[in-house]
Amino acid sequence: MLGEKEIYSLLIQNPERGLEKIMDEYMAFVYTIVNGKLSCTSNKQDVEECVSDIFYEVYRTRNLIDLEKGSLKSYLAVLSKRRSIDVFRKLRNNAHVSLDKFEHDWIASDIDIEKGVVDRETNDLLIQEIKALGEPDSQIIIRKYYFGQTSKIISKALGIKENTVNKKVSRALVKLKQALGGAL
Image (cartoon, one colour):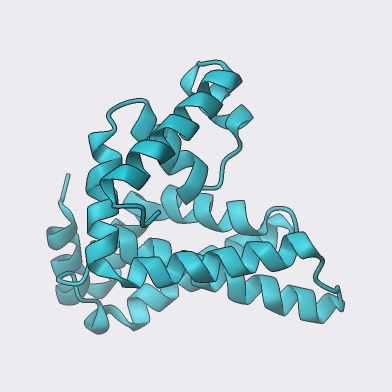
């Protein structure tokens, strides 16, 4: 199994093979993000097209990716979220669907998340603190706030009760807020 730097080097030296390796490694990750953002407003073909566009963008901009600013996985996450928002807006405009409060909050929250991801120091500190929570708390927080999964889905995936998930989320957020000096 190749690490991120080796995969990136392969992408630069042999773009087709490198893209194939990135897709093998991160397809499910990207698909999960896109599907989580578009599943309620789009069909499967729209989701798959968005995922394809993301990997095409990686191929097209491969020389601009800077692993010093963050990991390949975080780059893909941000790209996936942004592309999902673009597709959501395009589909919304094509269908002439007006935004209700939920949709507006969904877009606004992703824009706020993207601003946070751009701030590398805060992002790195947050990731460290989430890891420091230990299992299963760190996994619950990542599933809840990064992948947007419901407590019910998380409870089934981890084999714990839904109310336990909710309690762990509440306690973890308190710990993270304290660790980050109230910046959460």
